[in-house]
Image 1 (cartoon, rainbow, N blue to C red):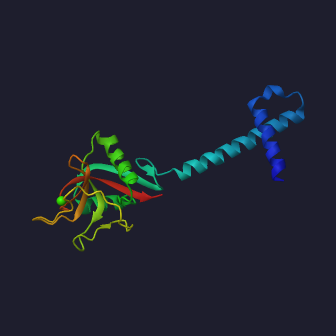
Image 2: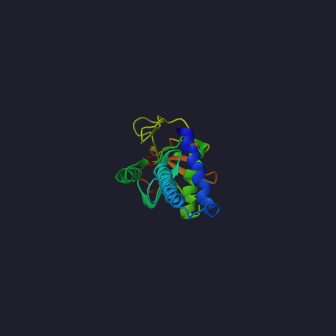
Image 3: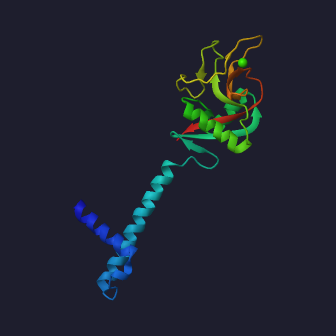
Length: 186
Ligand SMILES: [Ca+2]
């Protein structure tokens, strides 16, 4: 059955691509032709739906690694930034690889035309130097700047990215104001 269907589809493709090869005087041919067009457009729209659905983060979000990311250019404290991400169905961004980090940096640069410092979802507010992502994912990848995280004078329990000329990570007091990046699962 599948082979016969494939043959019919192949015939339909050649019919649609070059209809002049066929004799449309015949009523049977024209009925078949309109049947082919229906079949073809049905398959095309089904395929488009699939593509659209699998890549659909919605407006203002970018897709990468089955996640949707969004840069927020208004500055907030870390907890307010997290609440802001939650209000649009996400969390502050977690980062699990250098590829994910670079994608987040690109997202920021596309909007601000520079590597603007921004909050991501890492914090060690519960216990110093035990870092967790606010979205609950595992914390293994890091890109700390040299000498960071530091624990000098003031508490610095939240992670900002694009710090220093190296554009690496720094721990910072959570009440500072930074732009931020949200992520949500697809
Ligand atoms: Ca620091």
